[in-house]
Length: 184
Image (spheres, one colour):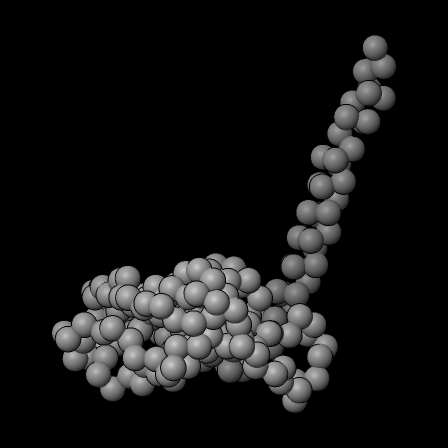
């Protein structure tokens, strides 16, 4: 999966006419993902006039979250691909665009991919996950779960970790043990 950058495109996008299920989507405010640039969680914005702006992401998790870096004009020259995956009721959609820039100014933007996918399998997995989550939540709220956890599960986990570490040590030192058993 890896890291990526965000791209917001305020410029008009070349959308196909047959995307009725996505008609309520505000494309000019949608945060697309991109792996074209630095992949450092930077924020890119393509303005209505076609200029590319960048706001560098934080490189340190201990930075003050209230301080937002300034947005600066970019002089990027090359292609910028950005994409999204939209989950909907009837279908799921994969949409990607390819924007070409010269010195930070948009030359061309084209629709690279627009695919509808059946979402039956995703919905089935989601339903199974939701049912399992509900079952587990009910299980953890039962009267006997704390007894099971404290008197059985936790001690058994500690014992199994101890055995695992002991076996790891035995395996990692196996050749030294073998050399003492068979000196020649």
